[in-house]
Image 1 (cartoon, rainbow, N blue to C red):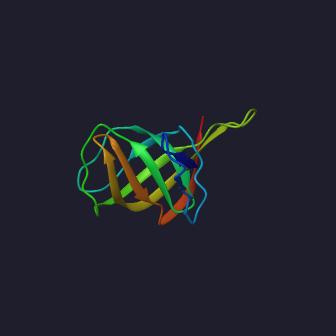
Image 2 (tube, helix red, strand yellow):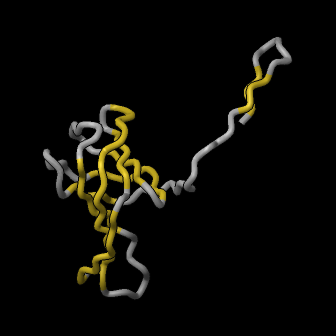
Length: 112
């Protein structure tokens, strides 16, 4: 991204320096553990090492968290696939937006 200043030849270049590619995915997320159980929320983006999600509750940075992400059901399948994740809260961006690590995960299948 290049930003130019009005009336100036000065330009600023900002480069993305993330190690892992992020995917903008809006998926249901359910918080299972941690000190304070949270209501259901929605992911904003997901990478191989973490997830940004929204939830209408407060959690503390550094707090351990256990959560389930429900993946879209493939056409013709009879089971829903969920991703059971364990991590910790690493950032609070806004009142209802949180970033958590994805330290361990497993796929869980449930009958539809």
